[in-house]
Image 1 (cartoon, rainbow, N blue to C red):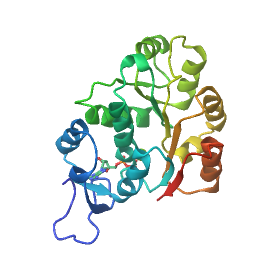
Image 2: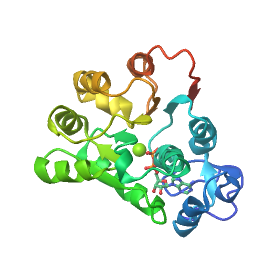
Image 3: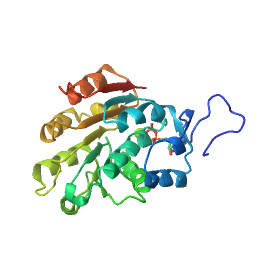
Image 4: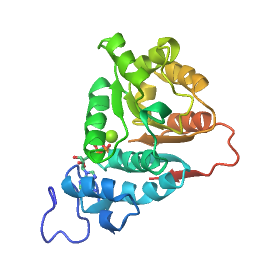
Length: 235
Ligand code: ADP
Ligand code: MG
């Protein structure tokens, strides 16, 4: 296990400093395709935020998750998202089913790279759209059908507005990573424009390194009036 010290019994930590639980990835109810990728990435035990949020995410609940930087939030939201794609046997024809919004290009690329490893044995498609790159080549990818899309807010909004053939009508899950940073960087208005364009009936997931009133208000806004859906606060 990466970075784990021997003899450190009570609070074993993962590479990023996330506190490891006794729960094993090998006992998680995920597809063998995902399980195999996780083994190859050398993860054995779930971190706290992973153990607390993955069960809710896997049953489709809306989640507001908060845990400090390095605690393993990326796997917490990517594993359930990939299982959603796998269980419904989505193909490129289904278009974009999951969107992960990240505050910066660097974070979007990092998240995409983790998803790529986790999806190594899956057939579903993965891509990213970020600012500062060619809109046209991104658009060509989107039109072919990107099942799991990682995006920065501004560029995502541009494609929602202007990329004909970008099929997001079947969106099932919207994940907002680093919600606190997204708000700090004044993407709130872009996010509101994004919500307006996306299908209403979907799972909404927010992750944040800090717990602030602003993030909570933003979560309440994004979760909307979906009485039938369970909402979970995990930290
Ligand atoms: P966060 O998004 O909460 O800041 P990340 O998802 O980026 O954290 O993970 C931080 C680091 O911890 C990464 O290097 C990642 O590979 C590692 N990590 C994540 N989950 C585990 C785990 N269950 N066991 C060991 N290391 C982990
Ligand atoms: Mg993160």
